[in-house]
Length: 290
Length: 226
Image 1: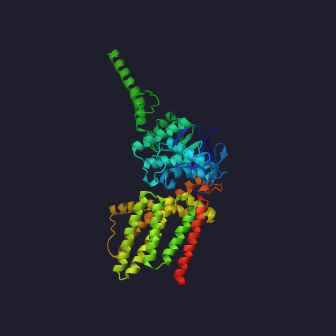
Image 2: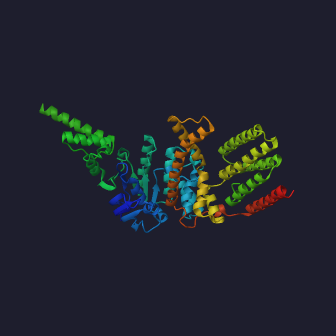
Image 3: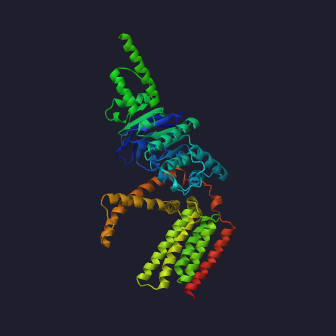
């Protein structure tokens, strides 16, 4: 069973203009799915639909269905869906509602009526998972942007959801912070088997981790699948080509010019190794023919 | 104060504020302010709270001095400064010693305030420091675009609108996000939350409430019947 299924799902906030239109998408259990697309493509609405805020919080009109862990989100409440889906919104600072780090994690668990001993144990566990161990009594206002982001993640991880939805989690972070955050998320994905649905406009940041990419345009799925299938499809579409990571722009450009086919590069090291071998082979070929 | 139930602390804030409003003698208000300082010392509050308290003290002094400079009696000027300092200091103590969610739980469960309103009250307390930061950010942003705070009172008020408008819009957007994220974390779902042990009244709370009631009766009697 897939973690999240969008079954021909359409949604309009005001009842007329569709923010999402006929979305058919499956997020597999344990997958690292990245959603990209131009502004206004419906990325945030997709996240909100996965956690049930659409339609429960925003109202509007919808067609089709979103199923989380096999359950129709329109049938359950946001609280019920939250047992399966942890959500970190783009404005993560507004998600932090308590004074200290430990209280922030405890808040989610207290809402679920957990025992105090369990809460104390879970606080220690999730803060260690996100690298905030030892900061239990630190005031939330005294944390850096990256630490606040990690705290927002810890607060939703505390209930051990099977799915984590993050809307542009690195938008307010510096490049190092973004890199650390995605390494953390990839570790969680790998170690806990948690499915991740992440909105990210800078695909270079997630190239090393994503196993599924979904590109939205005008509320519809423009392309979806494995990165090695989606990135060339984006490259061929004028409106989406600029979103292809620079590394893949080089790869696809070289493939066009040289009429060659390179492997699906996940990082610069893989690219350098293959290109080094390719150049050496070319030189050897040139010397032989000379 | 940390081991005192949130409901008792709310009662302390409200009733001692009432004392501050009813008392008209600088000596009596000074005694109340002294009691507040003793509570701060006994509560082992974070260093930041003492900083806030220090700022509050300076502001109270400035207020009293301004009253005096504008022609008020020395006693009255002191009363105004002490009254403001005491009432604001009580809120600082409440926030420094109470978890926001415990306050919400006390309002919603023990005082039967509808959840939405209880949350609104406590969340606004949590975001006061953030709001101050945002005011500064908006002021700086507007200054880059030529905003100047000086001029006549009318001009200042008119100029201040350029600060207030974006601030209100940002606050509304933020409160919307916050409300949604709270629901996503299971708040207000009707489940029995595990607040019981942290908000339940104990023996020391009943003693404190009795002392507060007696103190309030004494202050009311002194104000209206003596």
